[in-house]
Image 1 (cartoon, rainbow, N blue to C red):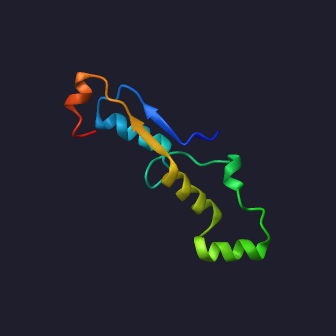
Image 2 (cartoon, helix red, strand yellow):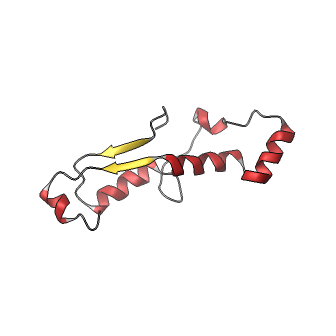
Length: 93
């Protein structure tokens, strides 16, 4: 995801626990538990002129918060159910 992928597909999903684990790995809080540390994209937009950045923050919130929200909004989690156990758990998945 850090390299630019927009989502993850989990093959052989068999339970709602499987789904929760993959969502936790892909989404940032509050939707998941993905870590946020020192990656290059975290600084995106921080090099703007101070006045321009201040105006944008007033309209849209802080840059890092916007970036996390955009990542959560635009990342895709897909699952593939391939077993009887998964089919039996489909309503929970």
